[in-house]
Image (cartoon, rainbow, N blue to C red):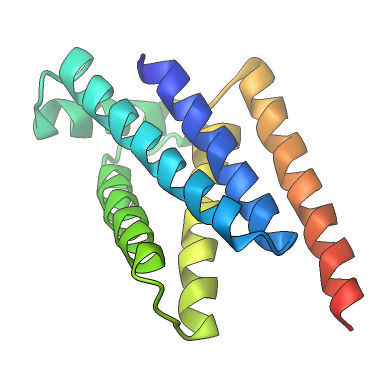
Length: 152
């Protein structure tokens, strides 16, 4: 449940971005919301099964993984995950309120989300998940390039 819920969340994240890039805002909003719901399932499953609802255990495991990858024993990345959850939740609520917002806010939210997804799917993942993440980044980049040149 923990692994597949986050994989589905990632897929829906990519589909939402593709829908926004191709000017399909309704599909994007539904994919964005569903992706968030699967992500919440992932967080709940991970905290229940692996950390027994303990922030300290999650912090220790984050520090271990960071040490394994980068040689730095630091669990502070967990706070970025908490922020990620809050930002995505807030963005879902904002979308359903149909409120306009400044482009810089959208760009900031999307840059942070992309950074977190990239780390989760490419840096901290392995095997075919890592390569699917790389392929998604390339595909979204090409889609963005294609649609951004069409607007001019």
